[in-house]
Structures are given as C-alpha cells and as structure tokens.
Image (cartoon, rainbow, N blue to C red; front, side, top):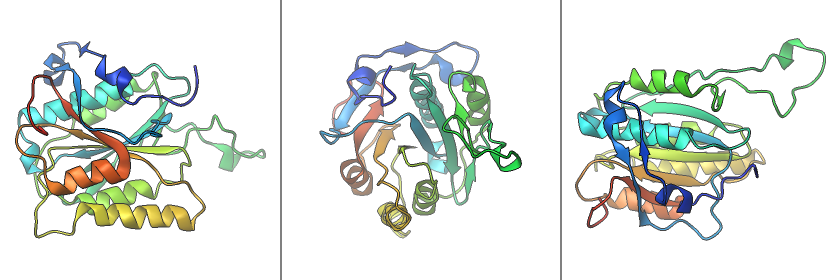
Length: 233
C-alpha cells in the first residue's frame, strides 16, 4: 500500500465503524460527514498527530465522540502508519507514545524505521493509544493556540495534524490560528514542509469562525462526527 493515505476523506466518508462496547466511546457509530471540503491536493500522510480538545466545554458526549473519532482514524490500515497525540486545556500534554529509537546509543545512525518519542506504530500501539485517550477528562480552559504551535514544532517532515474539538474558543483569548501561523513559520525556518491540518468537529451547535478558518487554511477540510446533520454541526 502507498505510504500516503489518499484520504480525503472519500475513504472516511464511506466508512462506518462500530467499535466494541467495552468503553463508553465505543458505543458511538462514527460516520464522517464533510462540512468544509479539503484542498484538492490534500493527502493525509502516514504520520498523524492528534490535537485533542479536553477543555470543560467537551464534557459528556463530546469527549466520547472525540475519542471515538481518534479511534476511527488511528485504526486505518496503512503501511508504516504512526500516530502521536496531544491533549489541551489551559495546558498541553503529549502522549509519550511507544518509541523504538535507541540509535543515539548505537554506533549507526537512525533509520527511517526508528520511532521517536511521542510517536507509536500502528496497529501494534492501538490499545496503548486508546488507553491513554481513555484516561483524559474534560475540564478547564480552552487554549488551542499554544497546543497547535507545539504540535507543529514536531520535526516530523511528513506531519499531518488532526484537530479534534467542539470549536468553542473564547473570543477574549489569543486566536487559535495564530499558533498555526507561528508553528508553520517555525517549520519553514527549519526547512520542514508545511503540515496540513484536518479539523474534526464534535458536539452540536454553530461552528466558530475560527474553526472554519482553520479548516480552510489548514487544507484538510472539516468533518463532523455523526450523520443527519444540517449546517456546520
């Protein structure tokens, strides 16, 4: 299979996943619905970093929908697929992953198969990722800008971000897109390609202008969890 996932999101749109009932989020049927089209040249890479909103507004079904969406994407059958995950409220916390990179202790240099800290190979690490996301609880403020900037500072050249959020960003806070601008500028300064960003919306209500802007400028478009919706949510 090609290393790129020529998602967009045709594969996800036609995919209906019913997850096991062992955890609450697994009771959700995930049926992706496109709200903002992805850029024509968008391809989700085989290096996906989830940026997951776990602020107070994500309580209840929203956090369960968010985690089910992560499960759906992480479960895609792609060769050499690696994922990372970062959760944000007022602070940003990154999953340590399941690194397999000991080359700094070896005489030979790292190879392309070396998995660095903060990343894990799929499908082997699927349960570990699910356990970590399952430990997340929704509470606190929403500070998306520093989380997105931190995610974009990952030195992975084939990076794709998936922002999972209800889009309730406080108007009196630094706009989320500023973190993207800073992060993409850092990547350019360090000779790294710009990382495309896909938005995955959860919950019900009206999508914020900030979130729609991220979906358009990030190139990955916007998707929502569930079917039968009218309007952006």
